[in-house]
Amino acid sequence: MKSLSELHLKTYILIFFVVLFAPIGNVLLGKGMKVSVGEINFHRASDVAGVAVRALTSPFIWLGIGFLLLFFVSYLLVLSWADYSFVQPASAFSFAVVALLGHFALKETISPTHWLGIIVICLGVLAVGNTHPRTTEHK
Amino acid sequence: MAWEVLLLLLIVVAGTSGELCVTRAMKTIGEVKDFRPAALFRVLIRAIQVPWMWLGITLMAVAFFALLGALSVENVSFVVPVTALSYAAGALGGEFFLGERVSRRRWVGVLLVCIGVTLVFIGRK
Image (tube, rainbow over all chains, first blue to last red; front, side, top):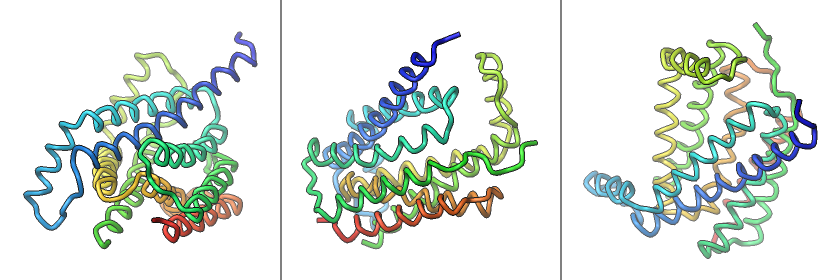
């Protein structure tokens, strides 16, 4: 039987991956859409087809999809032994990480009200996650 | 602006509906207790035979392409926090579609998320 501290370490490492990989994936998608695709004109169908080609040939988009897959695998792995009610609140931090990455890596401007909104969202997600994970009858 | 709101709405509504459909599909299969590869493969085979699963996957794909569309016109630090509205859609869907009892504490969290998203909308640029 594995020691408790070893289980804790394993859980925290996987949660660290979860809150890091999802934001990195989303930031790469954002970068790809800005750099490789550009602003979409949704009023022209021919433009939308060109967008799909440009998006699917963008290295940023594929790298982003790769990181989102890594996130998904880490998420499934940690959920195979840790409680959902323990893992889910941790996803609150990914909203802060995505804002930090957007600000520092993509040079996006974030106003004080915007930051406040992100902090309130994190608190809300923490509160949502800290509730009982199963309320339905078990068959 | 109208396109943008439509895309954000698609990310939240299609994404959450997709997850709800996938959850419903997995609940008809029952709790997975055996995590050996062969057993997991059998679960997968049963999962793809449930119509809810395909509806869920389709909706999640729609949400992904809406996310790409939104990211082409908006900052990632704006789009991703707004997608937190999924927690509100999830609570509503859980209560009315899956018959879960959503606790008061969870509704408080949902309210905080909505306030936060409003602040993000007000505070952008």
